[in-house]
Length: 271
Image (cartoon, rainbow, N blue to C red; front, side, top):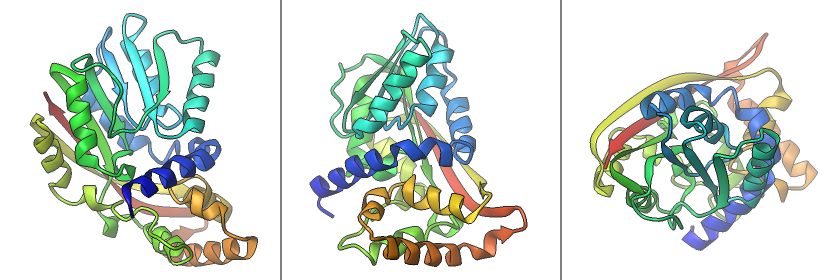
């Protein structure tokens, strides 16, 4: 997919997914987010950049830890995600956090101005992850650190067939490189090539929980990266896609719902 087209797909796709994302994914993404925050070891007063911030799940946790003497800037390619974050900040009466629409590959922030850069499960969607990491590196002060979490290897993510199910109903691949960064050493290599040193990586095996068929399909289709394509489907095509997806995960269903395996990879590096 051409980079410009991929950016449009991601921007407007996440606009569609924004209102569903947090409800469907908040608890299932928590293991990756917790490990990312443990690596980050945020201290009061730090200036923090959160790339691909989504609905601010990590941004607001970071704002609480850095406190009133610190500052958090959350960025996302989706206008709707940024709008949701700004409204949440108002509702929470927070003055140490801001949000802005930016592409990860072209961060409009001063160089050497942040103590920490975070990217929780966003690098898989950018057109050039290597460039995005270089942009993070430029934004950091000497001695500062960056932490990124990505989904792991395709064979360890039981929901992976969602992409093929959608791709065969549209004219181009939705997320052609989604699982690439989760392969062994790939994220480390990208960090190192961006200039980061003293790398540390953790791999987490997890289970995604969905209580019902509707919840499983909502997370996969309406609240995730295929949302733009999905919203263009007719009702009959949506129904067909739901049936095919549920068949692909039926082995993970029991009396309590779905327990789908997944894998996360989290890496930290220092400037």
